[in-house]
Length: 195
Image (cartoon, rainbow, N blue to C red; front, side, top):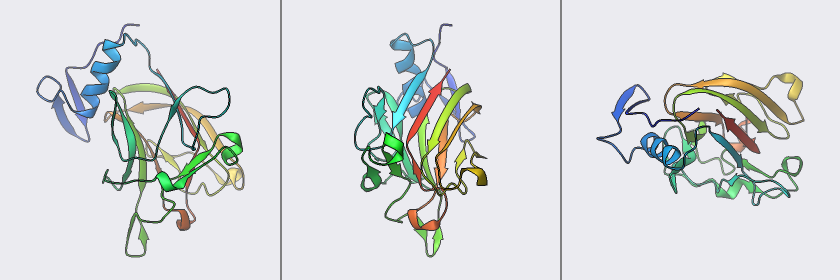
């Protein structure tokens, strides 16, 4: 299937014309995917301090959401992309050999005593995707993928690994967690998104 970049994208309810906004994150990935001849999307992200042995993929650094050579991805605190969550990255001794990153290890995404949502996003064209997410170890309360809770009580004290189809409608695939000490969803080890 040949992929054609979208002329117009919808981002958080706001329509963006890629001809007028060529630098917009969704337009950049649309153009980049088309220029590289990628008819299908097949992205794998890891979140620890190094790639697991024998694995290929993109190693997320904990930086705020921005463009990384034509592919836009990263973190935000309740929508604010001026964040650095690199201090939460852990080596391959965690996350059952995958490594991991905490959504907010230092508990900085708060308003007073309230923990605000922390997101990890990747800009992708709207559509249906096959997705696998690994929320490692424990603390899975309120782990959401595209706004849907994915981990139930049966995953307490072990990894919550779920594969599902999701539909992206706003130009970003999104995970949500919270600060480390919230007792809620606190880390991610691996994300695979395919179309």
